[in-house]
Structures are given as C-alpha cells and as structure tokens.
Image 1 (cartoon, rainbow, N blue to C red):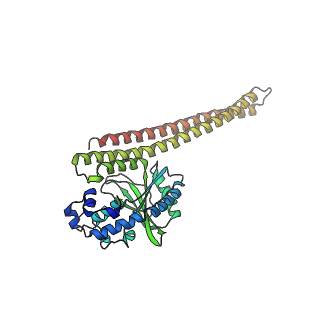
Image 2 (cartoon, one colour):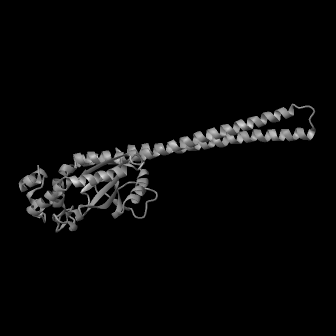
Image 3 (cartoon, rainbow, N blue to C red):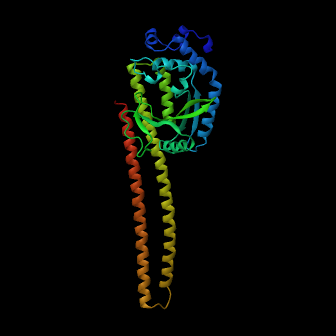
Length: 331
C-alpha cells in the first residue's frame, strides 16, 4: 500500500504497535507519514545507489556474495516509533526532532548492503578493501556474541568491538554519499555465510513479534553457538588444507633429496669397484658413503617427526572443536 493512502490505525496494526507504545513515542502521525512518503518517493534513486555499492563490493575476491536492500517505508516509520520512546530499551535521543527534512541525516541504514564471506579471517581482507574504496562516517564496529572465546588475534585500531545483545556477529560500516543534493548513509555489514543463515532464521522467528518465549530464545542461543563453532571449523579446515599442502611439498622435496643421495651413493659404490684403488682413497670413499647413509636416515627421521607433529596438532584441534560443540547441547 502506498504511504499516501495509509491511515494511522492501519500503520499501527500492520506493524504491531500498541496504543501504549504509540502514545509513548514522541512522534505525531502527520510528521511520521511525511517521512514515510518522502522515503517512498526516493526509493528508486536509493536502489541505484545500493546497486552501485553492491557491484563495487562484489569485485573483492574474498567476498562470496552480496545482498542489498533499501529500507521499506513502513519499516522506517516503525523504527522511528521504537527509537522515540524515551523509557524503552530501543530509545535513541538523536531521533528526537526527526522529520522529513532531516531523517536521512539521522537514520544510517536507509540502504543496507551485506557482504558475505566463507572464512572468518576473510573479514579483515574485506575490511582493507572497503577502506580503500570509501571513507567511513562512523568508526567500524565488530559485533560479537557474549562468551565468544576470541574475535581476531589482531584488529585494526579503528575497529571497535561491541557485544551484541542478540548475539549477532558481523562487521558494521556506515559510508556516506551524495544523492539529489542530500547526504545519505549506507550501512555495510560483513559476515560469514553461517552467520547470515542464523541471522535470517532469527529474524524470521523472533524479530517480527519481538518474541520473548524462553524456549524459543534458548534454542536460538544454542543455534547461535553452533554457528560460531561452524565458523571455527571452517577456519580450521582451511588451515588443515594449508598444512596438507605443506606436507605434500615436504614429501616432494624429500624425494628429490633422496634421489640425489641415491645417485651419489651409487657413484661411491662404482668407485669402490674400481681396481686398483689406493688405500687412502678407499677410506675416503667409505667415509663419504657412511655420511650419505647417515644423512638419508636423518632426513627420514626429520620428515617423519614433522608429519607426526602436524597430524598430532591437527587431531588435537579437531578433538577440541568436537568437544566444544558437544558442550553446547548441555548448556
């Protein structure tokens, strides 16, 4: 339904806003409707801006896929109502005095873009890519779930880490651009594919009704922890593949060294079979032969220890990950 035809009662009903919440809000219907109507009229232009961001972000090789959307006018209006209730948990003072002339300076997610990636450490590479493309309006924020063991070993100084009350994990950016002589903001979220799946399910189940059902919230929390473990396993498998490649290269190098040593040993045997041969030369050949045999044995032991060490470390990490995942079901 067009905002022009929308009535106050229809808006409240469509967005599950009670009369008590509406009365607590600092908004009036004429002002709120004017904001919705203005945003509706600018949607097409905002779509073009969103597509431009998406195309540029998709060019980053570490980005798996990109999703984008322009905020629905009624969703924008509903958000403003939530943000202008002084005694609610969602209240934000900057929304007071919002109107159709300044709302795009206050609301930072009129355009939303999501950059999805496979492995957790890809996020930092994407961060560098974004920083080379745009200047952020606000310092980037990395949201984490309370209880996460680690974020990244090293984060850029301009990234702030915050605990998200609902358990979301993602990097958030706000970039600004000019549109029709007005400054607008685009929110870019960078998260793994696993996190995107959990977020979508959580929104479908909980967000529409702001569900407080204890059992549903409990299962969503367990699901969130499993997603975190899945991301860790993804990073581990990636590292495991790197170690497997290193072991393969070590085997190839060892094989080449062995083949070279075998040729040298055969050459020494040929010298031993030569007649006549001086005693001193004979002893020298024997010494070199013994040295080559010892080197072969040493190379073999070093390679075996290296392989066993890597396999042991990998097995230990796997068992830790499995144990951690099994713990989730007991909490």
